[in-house]
Length: 460
Image (cartoon, rainbow, N blue to C red; front, side, top):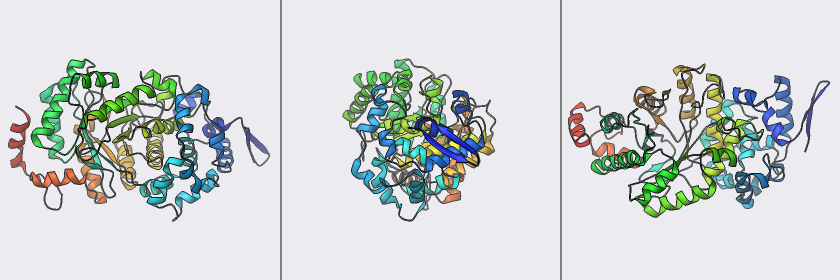
């Protein structure tokens, strides 16, 4: 279907819904690189005006990637929940925005509608929103998940403790874990990005995490972020796997570039569930995504990178994950050029993930060759905390010495918790109090006398 909108004497024409979505997207380097971005600010405004008048029902009739060509499209169409969609089915994209911002869109009504919202609907409405709109609506959404603790409750923000080491050294990783725990991080998970893909190394790291969690009786979960096929093989060998990790994208071809498809993810999900290692829940999957991954794989089909990213959330949603992480600035300035673009993308991803019913966090990050700095990340971190972000990263010193990028530190998590009065996962907070690491008010006790005891129990 062709879409048009006139501004003064100029009529702008958009060849199909895919083109309209791309031209309505706020500026970013990835879409310019792909050749799908608006050629002028006026064309972008015209696209947004045309998009505002598109009925939400049109997204069920016109796929941005053909149904027969892409299994993610088939997943989106075949899993669409008609009854959940009924309450908003009469709206246009512009009317959907107005409804989301109204008092009628409560946490409960948003939860009920989430399965009826397709990723393209979420991406479309985000393109009509200012940053404050994205923050306000995301704040309304409450999405919880459980394994050994409860993630996503209102008034709480979790942190993944990321103790990466360039040589996968057990003592170096353990020291970083100790640092993070003493500063109250790790309730989302303790997640290691391994430098090696050797299954023997991955197995050793899994056993290290399992031993630490069990020895200290920490109500959290461990994860080694290796390829899903490696995890499956290690599960078969009896390795102690809590969470099954995989990077995913929003098209079949992009997922193929990661070496996965939906069938493999289903197999991994079933394997994770079969272990029954969760104590209070069985959300066993951890997914990471990022704007630009489909473009970098040459697998975007002419779809703008933010819409591709939202489609990745349909993949995640199919497997009831514990955590979904948008690693928003990690791919580099070719896709998100500067701090302004990274901030906007982070807010979009968080909004779309929450709207689609996902326990989504954001790795507030940038690469060293991007036009961004830690002040930009402070801004995004603060905005996301205001928006009710599920979790963030906790990296020693905010500088990942293995992946070589800049993220958020354990102290950054303390900053936003103090600023907004946010607690951790309740089971983790209770554990901090029981061990004396936090006081009765759940604030860190700062008891340096506990360090030798914890160190001796961790580093043997």
